[in-house]
Image 1 (cartoon, rainbow, N blue to C red):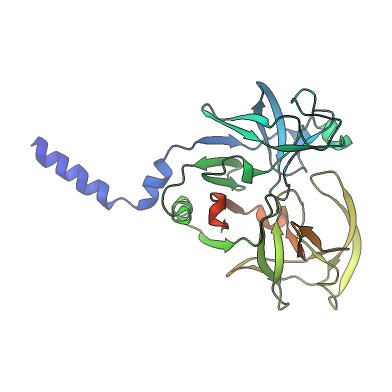
Image 2: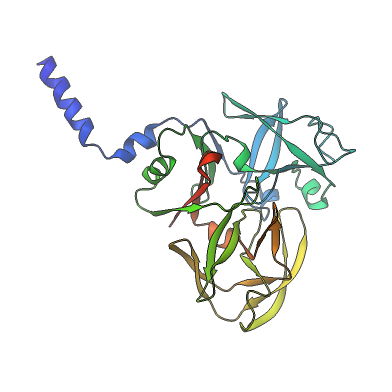
Length: 291
């Protein structure tokens, strides 16, 4: 009876979908996004311990490297007198994961000071040898041990969504440059940037599009810019996936990262329905699973 029972259990486990195994894998760390009202509008914010202190940081995939505002630098053992932190940030993620994150010091941003934000963390740097997932629908940042093909692990996390893997272009640590296009326009390089509230393209890329009005936006760094918006919505395509049909906002100039020019940035207006997977750096990829 015991042998038969064990065989039956083994057979039943073999029939379980593979996603059950992936979901059962304990995360290396798992941090919920902050729900504090003071953090609204800055993008995803998490609380982590740095040198034993609980600090709040914006998760910014477009930040290279992680940044600390000068007001917070002394207590985080940064060096406010120069651009590079004196010591790497000793960040504790979850109960057992600790990582040293290189950073730079930037001038204090008034909006960050008011919201008690210490700076911006680049998720790409938090677990460079594992699969990091920034999941907007579930409002959490977590990481799984990367074993085998990371994209397979990522897909098993979201069996009810269509997952895509994108090749990253260039060697920038912060900017995650992939190929994308708006409407029937040519494919160009765009940055997956959780620090931006809206998706934007350089004005030259949108030449000929009918634009309407102007509005001010604020990036994760508090930088304000005035831009126009297209009158018509068009499909926004990244790789083989259409993320949404959106009215695109303009920005004056293209961006530059590690010497590579890119025409646009994907902001939270389209990323808010997606989970972003960041595999170990040697894979040179980024994954999306959108609702």
